[in-house]
Image 1 (cartoon, rainbow, N blue to C red):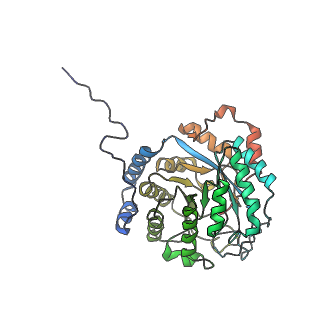
Image 2 (tube, rainbow, N blue to C red):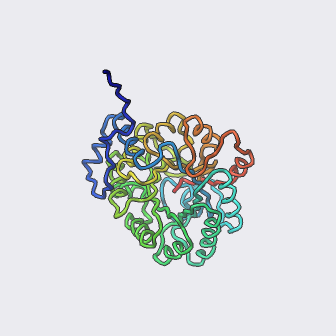
Image 3 (cartoon, one colour):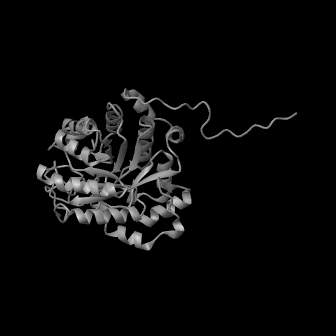
Length: 357
């Protein structure tokens, strides 16, 4: 009597859920980056589908609530007052306008609304308005995220009491390369802010930027810093450098596509329960590369035509690709045939894109 053997599932029985680790060594992470590409992507996808629906992507919107005139000297950022990038400075936005744009973002399919201000750190006099923004967006049923620069403990506590879900503060790169990119705040300053955020009970959103001339050892170092935190960041944005005229990095060489995909895959393996977000730099990626990056474990994007002050793919392009790949926005089933041009229109002037947090 013959027996039929069923095809093995994509997640075979011998793939166990990896334990969350905070003790990654440099040699281990370097070995991941050195794996054959197919093996690395398969490993990342296998781990990804143990923790997330592989056919869902979290859709977030990023709005600049205060643009330009930042005193920091981050070499990649068009919002620094030190560089002549032609960026128009805008003061802190009124609460009503922020809430109007949050509602438009929700209508367009976003489930998380992120607000970014180009500050070194917020002043206490600005906090009541910022808190009103958080409370108003939260009342719409959206998750809330903010990036305001360095925070003091009492400011983190106030944001927590207002209901802020996530606070974004990136490490940008490795501790060793950091001083080549930024001199106006230290690596420890960034770690201190993340500590204050975590202590206040707010989810941490922290990642970095690749393509700034760093070495592979710096990418290894960045991911070790993130994964060896006391608790993994709940959201890990991986930005690809957006070269902006007027900044010191305007003429930086193109970053290799496969190195970017490898970085996403290694982040997914090291932080299996974190959202890994495609952040700045997506507008230069074609559809095939987007598909590969989703397969490597990225499961969050910013949606809308601007990312603070830099370009982002058009909203309908993302929905078209989702449809072709069989991907749904997390928490919201969008029927592409019912895409409302009104929603796309509303998003068109929404998002001032930034070199992003």
